[in-house]
Length: 433
Image (cartoon, rainbow, N blue to C red; front, top):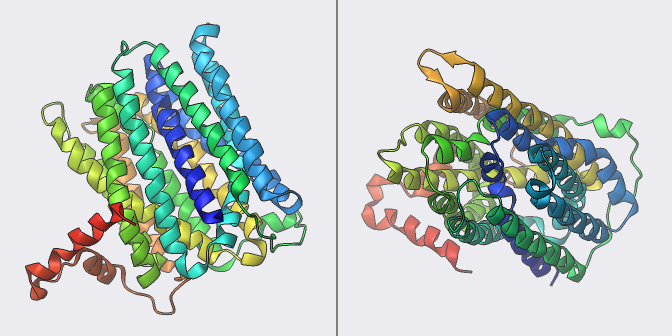
């Protein structure tokens, strides 16, 4: 019942996100936002996360995790109400959108240590990979449905009109509030960390966890310097409509849905480290693939988004499992909070730097968003190599990433075509459980 409640709430939150945050950049562009403003919006969730991690970890030690999640999730959704009304209430709506979005993300950030430790406590370690994969699949499925419907909805309004966005954000916020109430059905186990940790303990990561956090800091800068600008590239550089934007974005989600269950099984069988390595090298190639898409071959967005979805599914599932596996169960809340604190710093800085570069720098023939894509791809590739230094937490034997990749794709020419096509059946099984 508890796991089912978490998955139900997760689904509703994903739908909320697909109707709100996913289209926030488009909303800002409709109101005349520059690339720097887009970069700031991209940084705000991580600024909020950094600000609240210490108090959020302390709350877990004193209050019910379920109550923390319900209270702050509802608060975060309520602050979408003034945000969606900003174009109609204020002369400078972008400033207030930034302010209210920051507040919503601060409220959401408070729930992170509570929810993460709750999942770790209610899901057995042996099946954690499969559960995380199911959870990711539901996030992607409901997010995809919401994104497609949102794109179709926005096509009914002029591209520069805020009316369609505001109505959509309101409906999304209602779904989010309903999702928060679902957590009431969760049967919360006793929190195993009874010690009240001091502020000094918050800065004491060591060993494998320290290596993992160091890697995450560098990778987060690498991907976030470009991440907010994929939407800008599609909407402004390629000049696609909201309908195709919603479809293209949902293709990434569909690919993640189809592959996540299989990827979760791979982590349970071969470990989290090799799957994370494969995923991170995959996402490093995505910005370069985007540069192959032009206004003359917009259909290429679909295969690029498919690759992106599979790569990010492997990255997310591998990373979450590594975090849970490397953290100490006796002080998991404070370690996850510290991990989030440090890894949020580059996520704040990178998009602002990226926005500035797109408007002020040129290297050879590269300028604007294409320049950021190339820089990001290079940094992503370099950071992925750092994963090789981290110890596999769940398997006694460490499998090479290339071996796992060949097993995952069933690329064994000596075994024939019949053996190879089984990967299609396994991935297709991601739709069924």
